Length: 249
Length: 305
Image (cartoon, rainbow over all chains, first blue to last red; front, side):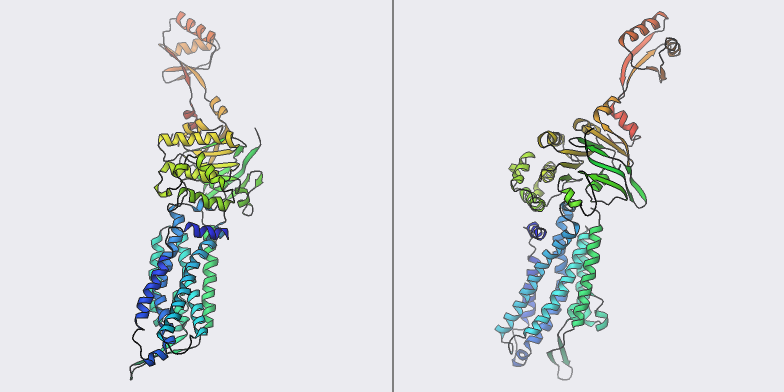
């Protein structure tokens, strides 16, 4: 607990909340702009529509924001060569855990704010029916697990490699993979952590070629996908933590 | 010798199959300032990192503060040890005081220790400045303050004067010399500069190519600085034969005869004898093998002094 408290203390004046907040602002501008002009039909499928759009925005933006956040939280140790001092007062494992929990807290707040934005906007805009809480919960589970797994991956890279450019490049590649994964076959998607925003979709978009009408509707939630991303998380956590502990400073 | 605070047995470390530290048997007595001397790349930092558990030894044992150190007790042993390894560690975006607060909380040291150590290292006036704005000397002093924060029994300092200007070196040296008397600490300080260790240390260990080639008190090292009498005459061969005849063995080196240390009376008799045999004496001088010569001999010339 003290290690985590110190991690937040160390992040003073690092503006760590800024990248997730900027992403949220961008998503609000971009995502919500398209919902200003809606007819009765669009409003009737508003909840399914918005839960289709936000994972797409997350897939494009979150890997980059996770890379920036992980880099800023890890780089303070590389720049000041503080790991050799820290590891005389706390174990490498506790440094790793505290860093992940600290960065994870920022991302969790971001996901919560995003959810709040979706709900508040949906209600104010007059989407049909009450907010579909179970669907929103599925969306939150999927978004949070995928986001935290990507963040963990980025943190491992940023802690193990002092050159932060590598982490940033990985973040950009992840964003591209996340976006293009929407076109991957479903079985292939599951091999990429960045594709889990798509794997864990609980909505589908039907495009009628003849009428040229798009219909959004809820579909089943891929709980096996949750297991998949949890397995990825566990593997990255165990391997990354072990590599960090073994790394000589 | 008093009780040892550090004792290593057969300590080894290899990187890529090459032994960087070989079979090191280091003994640091309690209350000493132990100078760990060696040329660059000799294995000083690797050894000190192994003492702190930052690097895993390939072989051997470390007994520190009367406990055999292992992965399980490492952090509890280190609670009584302060360290400054290579360059100072600091968070540039935090002030000097905030940097120390992190360690004070992690070490569970009393809060008033921050003000105390800032005073010891003379940084009280600069405590609210960001560490990134500190000069190198101030960063080193901040590093020393961090090492002193929990009033450790043992302080391990790796090249603490590296990169400092002469005034900074003098200041750091004074600080280090004060610690054993003022706070009863044992200090291990590494350097590649013999003069620095000579001015600070009570004990010395010399490492070269990963091997501890000498370890004893500084006083003993000084005793090793041999006296010779260098005699130059117009006929060194005859002079050497004459001296040998009178039981004085000399060694011809370059253009002089090296005589062992002799009482003044004997020297006077030798001069009279040589003069009586009409062997012209050109020069006679007292020669001493200095510490640098000893250090170079021990490290086989690999040293930068």
